[in-house]
Length: 145
Image (cartoon, rainbow, N blue to C red; front, side):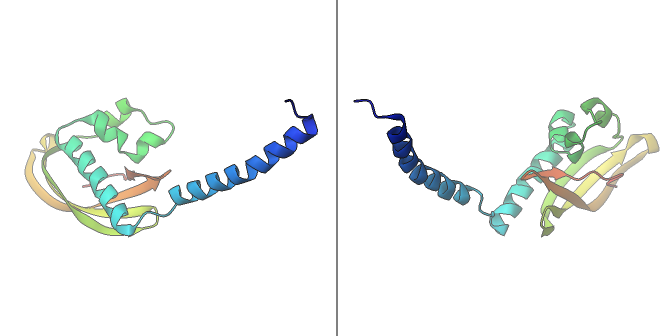
């Protein structure tokens, strides 16, 4: 049996309200704020992947974790040319601070700068990170050492 057009609209309108309500409630649960402990865990995972890539000279993986990769005008090729540091050992220690979309991670680094004939240098970096569109990226800094 075919319903008149006015009747079909009324039936569809009655069905649409519960469906839209259910979707809104479901999506609100997805948009909930992550717990601070989970936020720190996700940040530490990203930092570990980034620094492992730097240690292994995996420029493509490191680039994917850089804030610069999200900025127009920067390319992987330009990024690859800016480093002159050889990382010998890296230890991502902990999250020093996390406020909103900015964070600082403590990272112990042993490095060399062959051009300057420096080797075996150690430093604990206060490594800055920024969250863009819900994802953590290594913050753009002029120099990290």
